[in-house]
Length: 304
Image 1 (cartoon, one colour):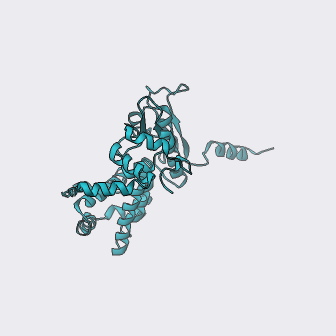
Image 2 (image 1 turned 45 degrees about the vertical axis):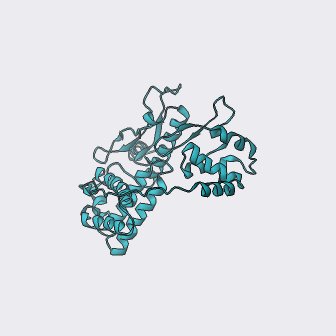
Image 3 (image 1 turned 90 degrees about the vertical axis):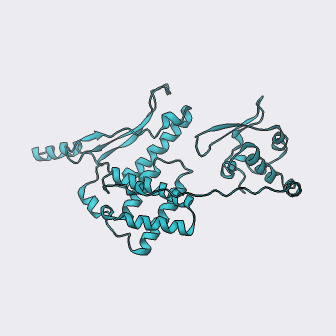
């Protein structure tokens, strides 16, 4: 028969969570997936002060505003939920303690902020954030700044880095790097790893966009004649010129995105500024679309 002490130990262990959090879940408007309700991801974490499991603020990430279809909204929330679950498993806490803050270098803090940030980004934005984060960290390592405590990192080093970008590239590139770094430093500020996001104090740089050069009619005729020899290349260029798609948007097109048998043929594409956009397909492209026979499914896009 168990002793009183053993019983108490067993009861106490049963009450204490094995991990200090409950995995995130999705609130999707009920069983009928009501789009008029607010959808979000929620989770709970043990408050280090009260030792109680506390429900954390819901994560919306604009899904209710940006996604009007249940399938798309649910897919976005699943991505957020999975990324958050991975962060929790890796040790993320919504309650950064003093010891964590004191031991955090600017390099480790930026890596952590990046992991937090990509949980809220679209797949198309992640590579850009990763690239610019890595470039900045490489600069810090080169000059020995990467070991500085995050809460003691001076604005001057960041300003010097952005100045170097201007000299090697352009004002536009400077501004693009500033946007990413400001976003990461904002994560650090909100989690009290730094006291101030001084990236916002740095001015944007002006830049003069280069004017497009026009081809002569003769040159256009020669180009069109040469391009027409390759029907896939011709179709690719038509998507760009007639539908005003970016090249990367064309490569992401799938067969099911093309509604060529509709009364008014159109395509659906995920653009840079909107989750989904509809564009009419001109008649000049329809015959070519129906004529081309691909050896591989269109879900692979135009990439070989």
